[in-house]
Image (cartoon, rainbow, N blue to C red; front, side, top):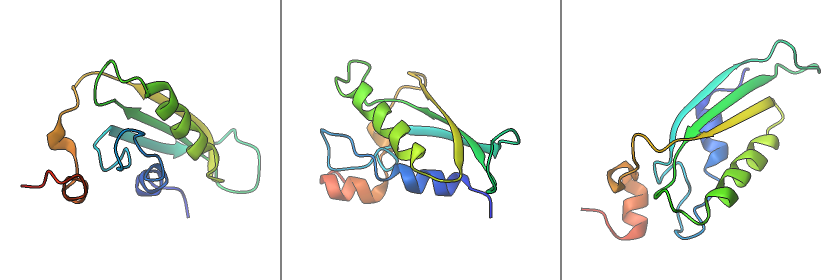
Length: 111
């Protein structure tokens, strides 16, 4: 069965923001995931190309390089992924309303 966007998002739930006890998916930092077949990849398994568009909580986030490296490393560990691109964007700007309800509760900011 080919890898799906949901599979990639589940893998990215292993990447936490170092300043908050919440993963980058539930923080709303991941804007878009694209998964498509990689017909040129060697090997027997169906291999997929994955592109991730994401942001940080602030443009001056001191941990941005570490978080991007963790994203790349986590996706490199997924056997079905042959190629990964991670694009860091600032538009639209991240806002706290992107945080999932479960993460809001964990952070004590649920309404």
